[in-house]
Image (cartoon, rainbow, N blue to C red; front, side, top):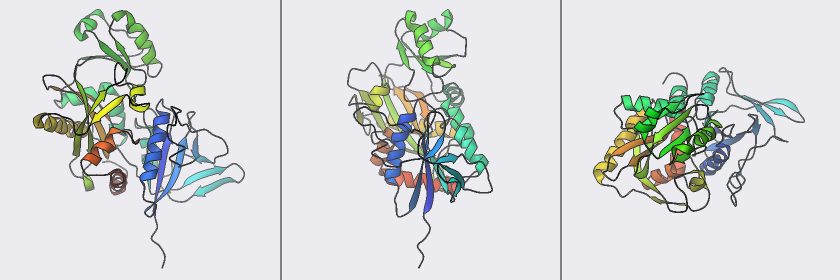
Length: 366
């Protein structure tokens, strides 16, 4: 008797953004969670230069070891031609010694990419053109969630509280009136980046220009946000099974306990700079409000699949949206899988649900 065909999952990771290494770590965890009896994994890396290669799916080689960040490099690996033909789910592979060969059908893609050229609607558009189902939000939602300016505009229109902010497009600077409106301190950040890359806390206006220069090394459009004094909390959202209403996880709090001025990259991924309360010690009313705002944010941006929504909670228990991530970190220490585990949905079941949701949804208008 012939064994049933396994679902073929292409896990795509690495990429051209500053979050290349975190994408690799996320992919390693996802691959490790996929049941080999049900899924056949195609580990597909993208180098920092943008080349697609068949590469290792070994979680140990994709992990951060002794503060050394993993990376995808081109070399002896076969090169993959990105998909673009909606009449065939196959991929063309260019073997160094053998020339072009066809890779058998891919049923679904898990784009474990963070930041630009991955989480921002670009790969989603490519997969839509190829007609290959994929995990996560579509083109519009991915782009809108990646761009913090438009996240704010859409969620403010939905009645979700946001803190004061200003947008500086290329060549623009903060006016004196805007400085007075925002006050000090402020956070200066790239409008379209994640993992706290390029973020600077400014407590003296004399340091503003240098902070803008740092942010513009990643993105010409810069966001300047008034600092909100309060606790940092997060909530996971999953699309309802078979397209139902979105569901919220438990709420978690991140506490920076080491010598970090804020929740920056080093605090997030290197060392033991943070402690996590899962669930967060909040009044039930506030927890419900955060969960409601999380699902409303997910819906306001027309998200699919999954998201992690981040908030500030002030000492007066007022809640303000910070940002939304449509492909949150999937590393072993990432909050998204931990929050769902606390809600009773363990990591492998989360990954399995995301793939089943993507296959059910397919491509096209959603």
